[in-house]
Image 1 (cartoon, rainbow, N blue to C red):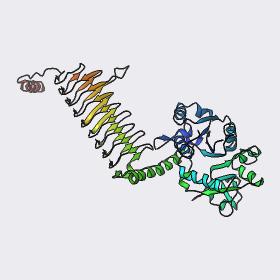
Image 2 (spheres, rainbow, N blue to C red; image 1 turned 180 degrees about the horizontal axis):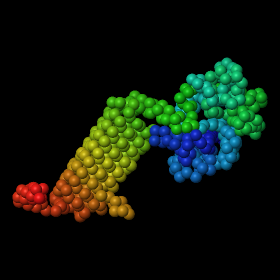
Image 3 (cartoon, rainbow, N blue to C red; image 1 turned 180 degrees about the vertical axis):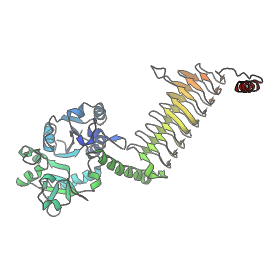
Length: 450
């Protein structure tokens, strides 16, 4: 029998999001909300696979199955949306052997594992049958209220729609996160839908547990951790909260220097080395790794890229998925790199596109250079050796191999391999027409006076 099984409720249709994308797949810090909850679930109970209760619409999404492969969770389909208790009942066959069941929500992504572990600790210490995570709300409108006594004792949870006028003044609210034993789970069948919404509320379990002489308790947490998302405005509010947290962690735990933290976007999975410097208006997307001493200059967008130690990126640079930048590389303004390895000490200072390439160390890629990697059907690779000089305004047509110490003359369109120490030049010969300007101007003047 497993000690703890986590159920994540994610079958809500999210109509107020006004989107064809299921709500839990909308992103915070470049990661689906559901992924945030799954990460937390794995931290709380790494030995067991969480159960995700999903709608048929969610289960049909390719992105949902990508998450399933990454996090190895079990899927239960809730065909009818008849309330939170109904959703948990759909998962009953998969939780029959768990001592305790923890219910989380796919649209409550900021809950922290330390908070949940503390809830589990107190739940066990108090030998509770049911434990509820609550919070003291700044504005309690819309939330269910906790009816409590002293210390940890929880008497009942009343949904906002069912509150009496006197109960409306209560500010201790229900987050929806519940932890209960198998004994409480066996009482789920007693929940009815005799309420204004005609739904089967999981919160009704509290009253039923109390009526059976069993113990219910509650714990309070920070309201920010249990904020949910129902519309795009709330999604933006949570993004703001999470970005503040991620920036603070980067500065305090990793020693990142941010010249203007408020203008810096950080994906949830970005990894920082020591002494990283981020200038204003930098966007660090998912999968980014920054080595020690890396500097990212203003208005640079980096996604799915690895930046080596002491490299300088930007300003106005774009590094896309698969950009692998070694140490002491300089990527300058208006340079775009995709699926390419750039080795130590190479400089690509301005106005270039590098796609599907491998560039050796100590190279200089001139302004206006384009790696022509796509032939209309396939992506092709360009391999550039060490200490290669590519002149400005060159086009390198893949597949192509430019060997060590070679040079490409400015303005060339190269489609043949260049051997070591060779100069590749592919441009029309220049011709200077003597006295052309004088004749040209005199002809224009003659026509003007006709």
